[in-house]
Length: 198
Image (cartoon, rainbow, N blue to C red):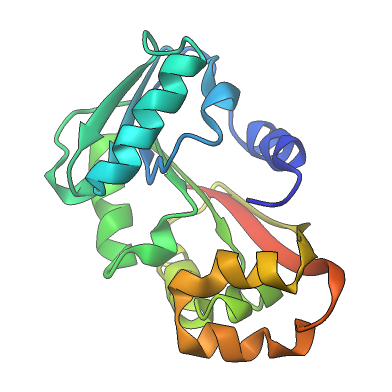
């Protein structure tokens, strides 16, 4: 993420205390926030993409954190261990059935933490994820929520080509939406995100 990870993590830690807890980290990706979860007792890093998980493993080894993280290559619904918290790290909106994912998470742990794009986020719009984001936050409202808050961050890019490269996997609609940035440098895109604890 081309934004201030440290600030995002400060907000996440203010919302939920991971200290000495066993955590199921859904959508661990390449492990970008791994250094910010070192206070946990144990973290199961669940990732369905084998190549992404391989990069995660390499990154964890570089950080000398292999003792803390157990990588798990599977779909979230195939993971069966219990924990004290389930963390959806910018992954709930990617779930085909976000309500069922939250329900499954609540069966797995007493606390479920959602850290994801916020509805009406300009960044989610450019990435053509606005409908998925709205659907995931609507699913959250189907559960008792202990706390919920939205925040603002920025995605920053040196130029149009860097922005285009980032959003290229999102497809033609996304590329059409960023045409307004063509030729620009020092591009800043607002990124609203939210944190909820169930």
